[in-house]
Length: 110
Image (cartoon, rainbow, N blue to C red; front, side, top):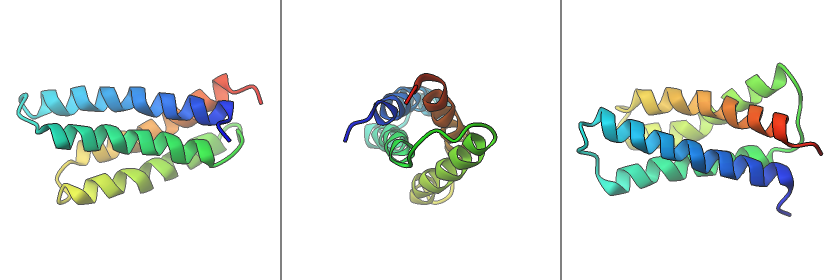
């Protein structure tokens, strides 16, 4: 069940989650709670999982559309849990959805 695409997407989501943690920590003046940072990382990991499970590589420009759509849907869950206050993480999630799809397209040769 763990296809190459799924592994690539999960790993990319986990790595992008670390970037989100760093960004959120810096934006908060190094005052963010650990549970908030973990939830942000976990959101990106789940984004990688969902995008990986979505199926095969579509090619351009469908990669952009599907990545943005999944990024929007999954990031909205985190955004709504912040009381609609963390717009930067929400918008970054849309971009990260595209990045995850792009990485999967580039490195998955199935």
